[in-house]
Image 1 (tube, rainbow, N blue to C red):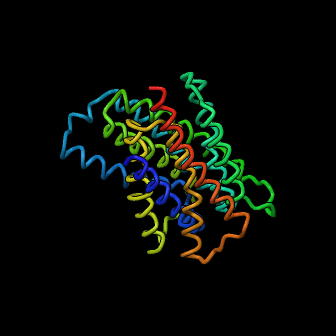
Image 2 (cartoon, one colour):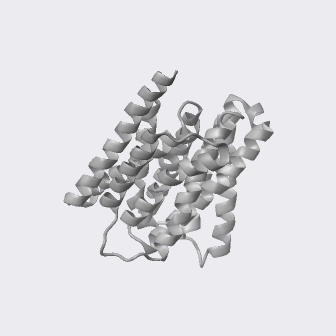
Image 3 (cartoon, one colour):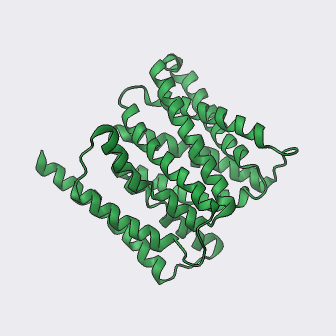
Length: 287
């Protein structure tokens, strides 16, 4: 059940790369992040007021959510800025390489035991990510370097969220996560805006989708599910994101995968399935 929700999140995030790439050409990148986060915060805040407003007074939820919110703002802002200078393929590959950073962060911070199956699955996924998304014609550029920040902040977000949801109310953490990200991105927008803001109907619809589906739904699920699923498994399943991005690219802008890219997509799927099946068996035998 939890795997299904994580795969759905990967699918939705896969659909956002082209929207962000298109929107950032006409809208300030910090405003895009602010719009996404304020929409998500408004929805969560109204929900908590109607259900259990006492949870909003949870100090731990506020602190943990604020930390995750800053990481969320860094993740979104660096990815959005990076997409101004690099391709969606490069962005997808570098962002998804957070799957490599997660086990190292887990080990360094929490002495998390990394099994052979973890290393094997991550290696297969990484090779698949490279083949699927990375084009050899484009040189490494400033957009790629900026997106490295995205991968690192995303990895820390996954790891810390996995710890925080076991210590405080999940809904409160998520609410204040969106609040902190809204504040950070608002400040960044006010400092970087040039002239007045003009949103086309297309950009408005894109921001609405990014806010409700790409932010509210996806980040609620990604935090909530870590009550029951390890951070490493979350990171590995999220590597499906560029696979879904390629699928959306095929249907909406008629991009066709070549042989190298097809092999990459298959390897990612193999890595994810292999890890899900074998890790479960190993844990059952150990118990």
